[in-house]
Length: 511
Image (cartoon, rainbow, N blue to C red; front, side):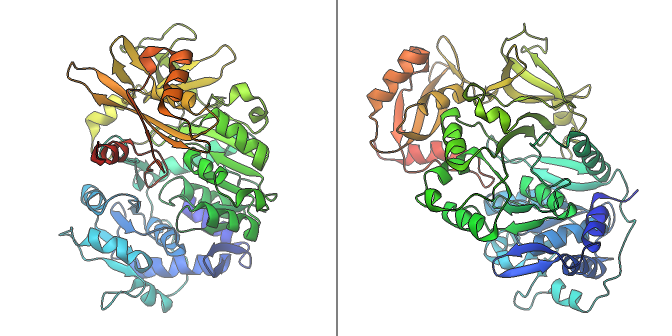
């Protein structure tokens, strides 16, 4: 049975003249993309062996996609630590995965060089000219373009995707070649939900990828290319450039995290940009504020679909575009997918009463193959086929899931627990609060105190106004000890709120 990469290349080869990739001023047709993959695979053959892992230091470039496909064709796995991590963290990932080969994109040399300087392993092979170092792309120019096939074994690792690192050093999550095959079958079963990113069966899709291709962006790019669409790559997310690309390239589909949607809403170009081409804006990866999502639907249109899933678990639930017309549902993550079973449990793993709060366990059929070389952590996370998500949730009488917090982000205060997501949503109900982040700081008695950071609009509220709102709506236990007004909430490289960085920034401020 062909691998997902072979199926993708076959789909591209079937229509070689169509525009496949757009990056800066480059426009790459499908046939050119296929030839580039096979030529690079011939150059790497022998250097890259089946069953090994290759580390890729690259950003959102065509070369990153070509390198990943070429490595997978040779039966090897790929690990691409995203550029939003520190050089030390990226170097540690390369060491963790025991990379047999390191590929570095010359386009990202400034970010790759500090990583390589921390490694004692094999010298990098460069994708593009980099001084006197070997340039495998130049070698590939003279290599044959004949297909390389059948190197991958079903149970070998195809990809190691690392978590965002918001609660510690990123964990490596492994997917085998067989896992990706099962994923394609699962997507075919879910076609029509309107929450999978647009691509399956949609040959006219034009996908804008401004989040890392090392994560969700790469998966959606593959799906769009395989179904006859075009992928427009941006080096990173900047709201003005994003909006300009939507209008210029007539973008139909994209994926964003909620904090990035808020930045679009707050950008002065939004209301003068033609976004009429958009058919699907899938969002997920972080909690979404109901008031701001209602604003997004009103200003951009009924194109939003929320998809809740985890790197460890796969897809869990969806809130369709039609359901976004009901404001009372915008505080949920939708209903479980038809392929997903859920259980909400207490601290001992026992089911809670209907409507009760507890940790969400899921069984999706698309669970990870395990954490990279961490069997004990894998066994603690995947129990009899159930993934412990670490999310605190409840399910209402209509079947909609409400995410209340991460288990690790719950703030233990005197008298109970404060759920950070609930408090963030409450603060953002104030019309002058554009974004909010809530976190706990350890106290001397073993509990924590609640603190909030707020991005304010105009007119800006004062701290007393916000704490009074919280006291009235949620009670004194939820009232933050301090509310700091900041210009921007720091985000991780994949677009989630970076509470570690936020704590550090606020701690460094003079008092």
